[in-house]
Length: 300
Figure 1 (tube, one colour):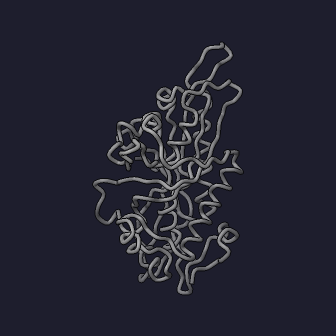
Figure 2: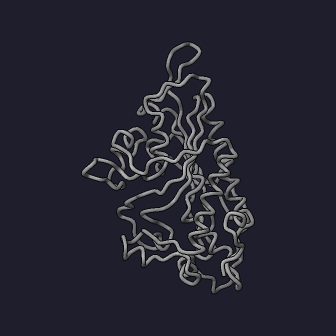
Figure 3: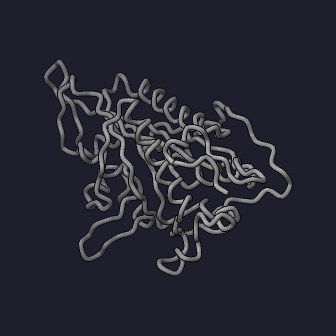
């Protein structure tokens, strides 16, 4: 994978800086043990200022997407098998999804699934394109086979929050749209004052559904590692072919649309990096852009 672009400043933290799971405990923001009690590992309980910071991030991301021209959608959190097939989760990733056997429904791994499936079996007029949607949802992933240091704290969860952006595009404009989506995600990490870089993924690391994928990572200063917070992908006509999502061209014939999506953004690792990078002897500073949403500027 190739680092394509980088920005922001990696903070110098003191030697006794705490990782986010210790900060969460110290300031009573997130309770991982309570989550284990009521559900199991990977289902944290957010409390007090931790819950408010989570809500602030969701609102900020949705507002930013709306300002960038995305229509907000609030989708169902469970989908039928046809929807899982349409976006390529089924049959490929069946083992990673929670399945409600009785009703043959799947808990969504990302809002991409219900939002893109809004356009299953739809024929647009060419003038209708592009379609730009954003959605907040909880996301559910079994993460089977995950273990070790990568799963501590918020690094890898079975349930997490994410704001997604989705575009249905004319094939002539999908790569332009991909650049626009990357610029949007970049603006979010910049406004959160986080150190970031963009990776262009090599074939082996991409989903088989994607033609090209870029990952955004932010630097988590106490863990001293980069954490993935967004993937932005152009699927070209792969999903559209499964979805039968088409448009009628000037030639009066139907053609496949192109679909794109991106996380803007996934919350857990953003939260991890914000807590770690902004810790001071007096408490955890809140980035300026979030203060109006949080109603506080420090966690102490």
